[in-house]
Length: 177
Image (cartoon, rainbow, N blue to C red; front, side, top):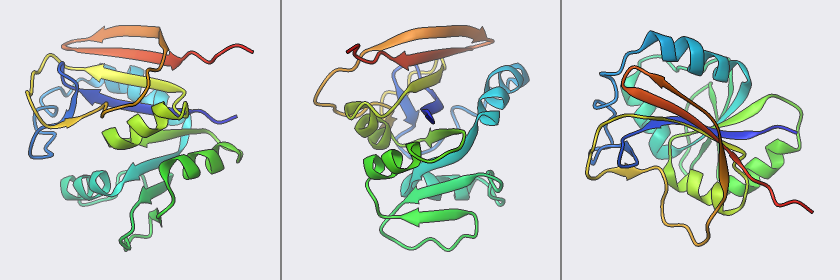
């Protein structure tokens, strides 16, 4: 069965983006080694991406070209998206993930969006969190983990330092029957 993975970077205090939804604080970490040893192997095991509308809009402001043209990309939005590269859907994140997990394919990447990640964690639909932690303290902005109504249990399966970044991989501990 396909796995659902959040892969992304956060500040030391848990923010995905600053208060202006900017990632400028992150771009100073241009470490080729983490790209070659972490991101590229991760991306090879993914064929589907899910993101929210805010993440999609932010992504398109940062780049003139769509960065994932050969990947199936779903954007959760009630507003129409005019792009040949994405499939707009107004399904809930849980509905979409459950549907995609039943299809054949590689893993599913959740890009950005603390609300999406937190919702999936609450429903035990995130299998893996792979997080690159920077030494920055932003103080405010977009948190990776939003308010959740229950706790989840993950186990650390990997950690490695790449310059100033720590790459940590957590796997959901599933209850045993």
